[in-house]
Amino acid sequence: MAGLFPPWSDTALRVCLCLMAGGAVGALAFPMVYARTPEGQDRENPLVQPVAFDHRHHVQDDGIDCRYCHTDVETAASAGMPATEVCMGCHAQIWERSPLLAPVRQSYFSGQPLRWNRVHDLPDFVYFDHSVHVRGGVGCVTCHGRVDRMAMVYQTAPLTMGWCLDCHRNPEGHRRPVDQVTSMTWIGGGTPPPGIAHFHEGRGVDSLTTCTACHR
Image (cartoon, rainbow, N blue to C red; front, side, top):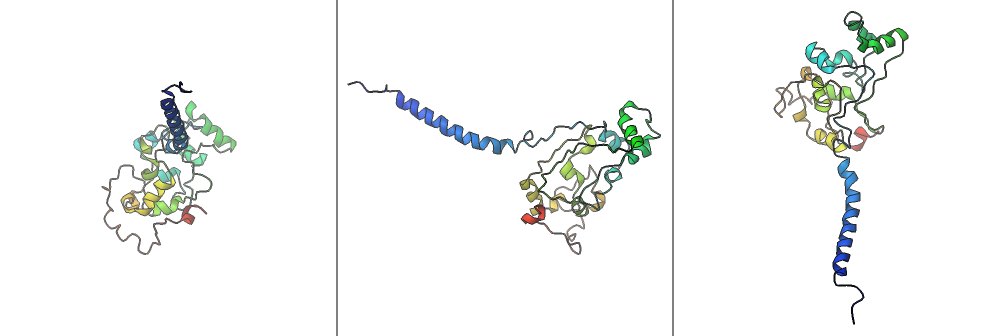
């Protein structure tokens, strides 16, 4: 008596079961893998801003320090964005008629601040204090990348919890002399700079890895 199913049906069943199992694993793994890719983290995608501000020109050509515009970076949790009056301090005399700066002039005369689009947007449940990191010798380039080479700023670091914890557990290789914090070209060779071995002493600096350090 002939079998109910042809001989190849066992093989077909095994293939189908393997495909179903693979599909289930893939459905679970894909979001976790994608969330760790530059595209999933929205990295390396420049954001269009209300003003075509070119960091290359301001940093490389004009030598403007980060703190000239981000005035609160050493004293507050937020680095701060420049008021329109800061921009007009120069552009009332330089390129004062440029069409590219029309939004700046409009903001200045109307009193309405420019609304910049946030590039490094941490979740609301994450607490990050710029001043603590800057005073601790963590350079701007460590998290923000070579902004001096960006026509339009984009996120370069993953900013994931694992990425932050890696630095918190072994911070020495990421730290530099405080007077070099805003330097885009300072090279430390992966070792603590001279004199920073005792940087913790008397400064209350801790390599925090507890949950409440960032989740408050």
